[in-house]
Image (cartoon, rainbow, N blue to C red; front, side, top):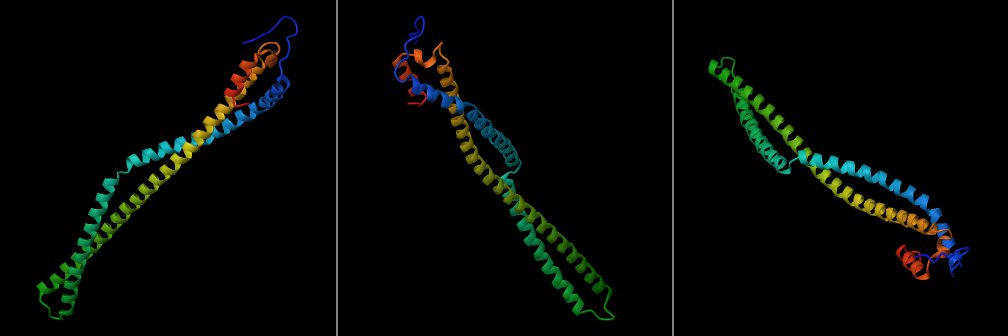
Length: 203
């Protein structure tokens, strides 16, 4: 590629302009590397967050959550039906209560009150299970949404890193070409100059 001659070779036309371009490129090399390193940091952070979210999703089975919500809803409906039923019994026995009420009547009232308390507790427990399952479902959807957003952000940053890497490589290649031989760009054939300048988008 070189037409280096003994002594001082003849500098080709356009050499001075190319030297100016090489100086500008040399000045961009270090900043390009800094930008590249800065872009890699948030990309690495996003990669870690994506992995964490993927693990979280793996631990949250959407089908299982839906089944839990369905079962808890049915349990809650049954529990409240029993609460209503036993409440009617308690109210009825209390309305019929007399000072000389027979023993079986008093015992029936106590049983109805006990059943009512148990049904109420079960209804509260079912309500808690339902609320917990619904919260897990919301968390699951939120994780999925975050994963989608992070995926888009990661793609953008990844493209930025690729662009910056290419820019840095172009800087390095240009600097390498400038250092080619004792006189650098001055000793390259014109056809070679056009080829590598076009490759580096420097024309």
